Image 1 (cartoon, helix red, strand yellow):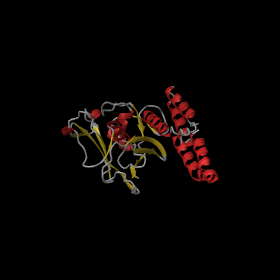
Image 2 (cartoon, rainbow, N blue to C red):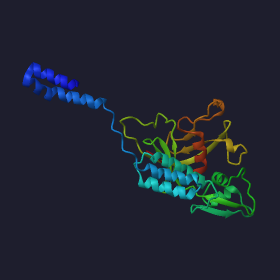
Image 3 (cartoon, rainbow, N blue to C red):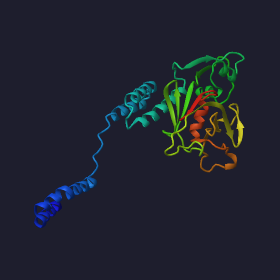
Image 4 (cartoon, helix red, strand yellow):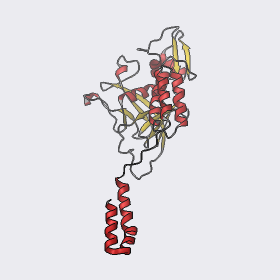
Length: 282
């Protein structure tokens, strides 16, 4: 109605020349204004959402291996899904549940404890770690019994620290295993706007556990409540946990610089990873 009134006034005042002026100058501006105030066109529905929900339903039914395969298939078939990150989180949780359990999979060995066996020797012989053996077999101590059956998962992982994703991503072979959100970057490695990230390669050189400010190893009775660092050959890239709220700073060790994750993430990585695992910062 407003545009019609303007048109009539233009014709009355300026005649034909006014009409052409309106068509050339005023009308495009009015149309532009209408486009700006018009509601945005809704995005088309994501056709992958029902498939994601099917994967979740399989997981809730308790079929861990079936659910894991379903999520791997979903990620491969729907690389631009709005549910891609959710699928990775679900898959990561499934992967660790299976990995730290007695569920038989091709990447685990079954070992029967023999006379003279100690956990460090078993771990070294089978290229795994004592921490991983303890976690996978739900052991509260390092003592072994003759005839005891142990599940031995293999820690053949690769770590990618991604500035773009703001995550620490763990791969097994070339396949996604789990991802962990980065809570804080050190200034030396933080993503910088407009600057291409420098890619660096390294490896894990040490895993450190702390209890009340003192270093402990996996045989310590308080090891279960330790906080964990993952030391890497890349400078400033030590993975460490942020202190829980209310923690006494005097009893919480923090590296001079490093990449902060949640305490649960570093505890899990401390069990999963092994010295020598390759790391890429990108």
